[in-house]
Amino acid sequence: MAKDYVIGIDAGGTKVAYGLFDRAGEIVDRMQHPTDAEADGPAFSDQVINNVKSLANKHNLAFDKIEGIGIGMPSFILYDEGRILMTSAMTKIKDFPMRKYLETRLPTRIVLDNDSNAAAIAEHRHGAGRGTRHMVYMSFGTGLGSGLIFDGKLFRGTYGWAGESGHMLATPDAGVICGCENSGCFMSYVSGHFIPVHVKAGLKNGFRSDILNPDTVDGCKLLEAMTHGDELACHIIEQIAHYLAVCVYNIYQLLNINTFVFGGGLTNLGDKFFSRVYELFNKYNHIPLPVYFKMAELKTDFGIIGAAELLREHNVE
View (tube, rainbow, N blue to C red):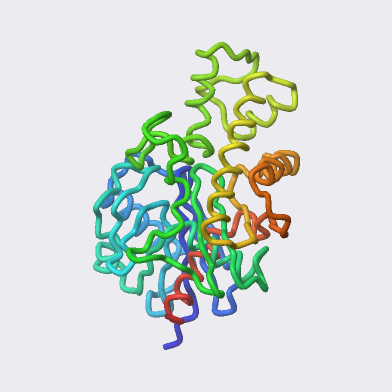
C-alpha cells in the first residue's frame, strides 16, 4: 500500500508544532500546543504519541499510509541511537532513548534530530539557502543553535550535535547558568528564554524601565520598549546584538562559510537590530570579502517542514 503521508514535529522551548504532509510535500493540516517544560522523556513522548494519533484519526489515516515521523528536538541527540542526552529548555528530558520509546508505541518509522538541523535542511532546500553550497542556519528564538550545511549536506559531527553554537562559551564560568549546565554560554546572553533574567538583573543593577516587567516580558515587549527609548530595553537589545555578532563571527572564522540564515521568533526584532548585528560582526571581521546575513523564508512552518524533510534526508543517507 502506498505510504502517502509524513508527519513533521517541531518541538521548541515554547511550543510543539505538528504538520501532516502529503506525497507532494504540501501541508494538509497543522496543530500545536504549549511546551510542558517540566515533562520528562516518557511524559513528553506520550503527549506526542497522543497528538500524532489524534492527527491521524482526524484524517481517517491508518498508519500504513504514513511513511514516517520526523521530529526536531532542542536537544543534544546521539543521532545514530536516537537517544536524547540533554535538553536545555526541558531539563528533565535527559539520557532518554526517545526514538526507541516512540517506535515501540507508534507503528511507523521515526527519525529524531536536533531542531536546528531540521530547520537548516528546510531553509537550504526550500528557503533562503537555496542554491548555496555551504550554509549556516542560526536558530534565534527561545534558544540559540545552528545547523551546518557542508557541500549541500547536513553535517552532524561525530556524535550528532554539531552546530550547538548557543552552548559555546562566551564568558566561561561567569554569567547566567544555562540548562547546558555551564555559566556564560552564548544562549544565556542571546536567547528569548533568558530575557526575563536579564530584565531582572538590569533593574537590580540600576537600569531604568517604566515598561519592562520580568514576569511578563518577551521579545515583542522588549522591542516595543526599545522603540519608546526605554533604557533597560536598549541595554538588553545591545547586549543581545553584541553576543550574537560574536557568536556568528566565531563560526565564520572556524568554518569560513559566508552565508548565515537566521530563523526563529527573535528575528522579529527586525532590520534595525540585524543591521546592528552586522555592524558589530564587521567590527571584528577585517577581511573585506562578502558575508551574507539572510532571513529565513519559511516563516512559522520551517520547523515542521524541516522535521518532515528529515525523513527524506535519512533516505538519502
